[in-house]
Length: 142
Image (cartoon, rainbow, N blue to C red; front, top):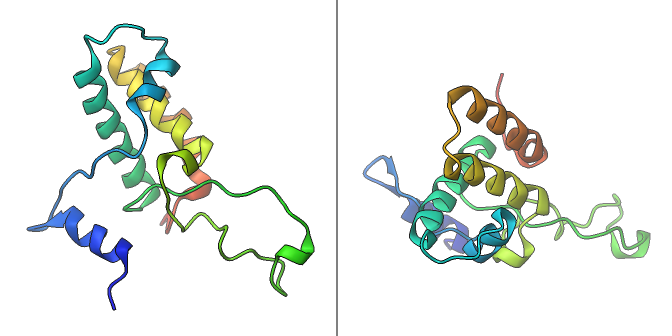
């Protein structure tokens, strides 16, 4: 049986090309992060948010955003290996549960694009975002 994440991954790949999925991060949250109070840039912010999410997903080698890890709840809540298999960041969920460091990295990338950073400044923004995304990266390669 095909899982929901498999179906989503199939929807993301069409004709061998990646097709952007709608952002799971709120544009309202991005506006608050950027301290924007007007609505004239809402469409632009949505587009930048989608671009930033796509970049983050590509870096992490994922098709969906990882969810936040829960706080440690004691040994009785974990299996015999000390792992809560429902809590590992492979699971995905709605935007309220997206890992804070992943959300922060996406905000950083969107901010850099919104502010029109030059290539050198944007490279620094990407490095900062990658530090936040690194723990959630799958198969980082060589």
